[in-house]
Length: 89
Image (cartoon, rainbow, N blue to C red; front, side, top):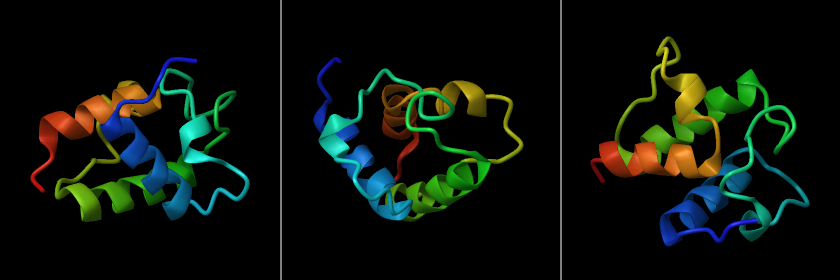
């Protein structure tokens, strides 16, 4: 497992809190592991909840109809990189 950056650690904490992932330590999330399926095992409802939490915290919208979503939500690292490029707050 590679080490989380400070931005990835902050995002991991947001994910765990917004999705009420009991028993998941934010620091234990591998930044390169898939968020959906085998990795954290998240589903499409989780993606919607994460998008809402991200828009509230970072000040920009993640569109549900974007063709980029598969790449953006591929891993904690990919999502964090996307947020750092687009955040307004």
